[in-house]
Length: 199
Image (cartoon, rainbow, N blue to C red):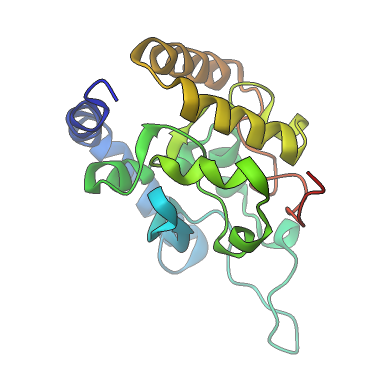
């Protein structure tokens, strides 16, 4: 894999040093806005389906209804949270996951643990490598694609992984961020939950 892990480690370490002031700044804003932890931590499947703790900035508060149940996501998404999602700034803490070896800078996006039993056929092969902060599906209309199209791109990436493809994906990710084109949906990681496939 063309020394992918050493490159991930070096770049994530340098990146963490560079963005540390930004990390502190947004953490402070989120603590004030959400009156609690600025981080959202959730179990996700990594390489070979090994479970790890994904780290993101928390973009929603913990507001509940009169019965103690969390309000819908759209009602809990804060102004600062919406802004951070629009620029994918909520993803920045995942650089810690890259540094720790749970993730790569580039690879299939880590999805929910609950999706694992739903994959069929080749779809499971997306877990043959480390998940990434960005990936092929993310730069090809991520939230406009069907789940099957996303998984097809993930498996294609697994089969064709090389340095030049990673460089291209990295460049396209930066371009989309500057253009503010949908790396993330406005409210959710994906437009609809994955319920299984007929393939």
